[in-house]
Image (cartoon, rainbow, N blue to C red):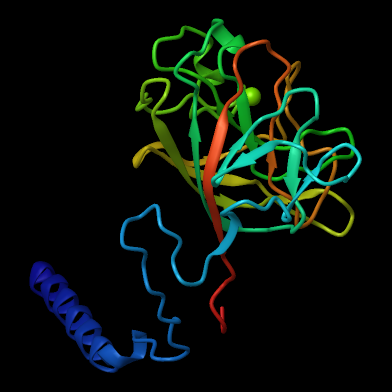
Length: 262
Ligand code: MG
């Protein structure tokens, strides 16, 4: 008798559940507006899509400044190829960004010399924040056949995250980074609200999978979010080592804003 009552009870709960579910309709969870804008993709992934901001194209460096004194960038630009001019300092975009998708191509010269961190070292700082912090560095280095600490090789978030794999091409060949950057957020009192996050495809291969950064890059010591910041420039590094300079080309960016209504 007891068991009979138990089964009857379970049966009635199940029936009630089914009735409750019937009240929901499939359209309740379907979103129709706003409609995401149509974007025409490039013929190949390297080409900027129609809504990209092209940061380097042709022969003008108008969108780049010397980081230290904000004077016009002095690196060498020839036929759309920008080469680091060591001694003139890092350069950064005039425009500032929060969250974005970035495409950037870079090349270690075929005649590269040096070893470890002194072999084709440069970097893409995903936000250049100043205030005593360099920013968040995605390392550029010849890591084709060059031993160094793994969280300092190409595709690493310098001193924080080792790349998942090493898809480096040989010196002399163009390589690409495709980056999805989610900027950190800060509360009005300066405390951290949410960590920076990054996804990196290196030559089309995933090397950073939504890695959460502990703070801006530190050469010595542990990173921490000591300097709250908002939208920031993207910076390219003129590293002080003696090896032959790295080149960049085809740099474009798509700002990522939350869809209207979110
Ligand atoms: Mg570097």
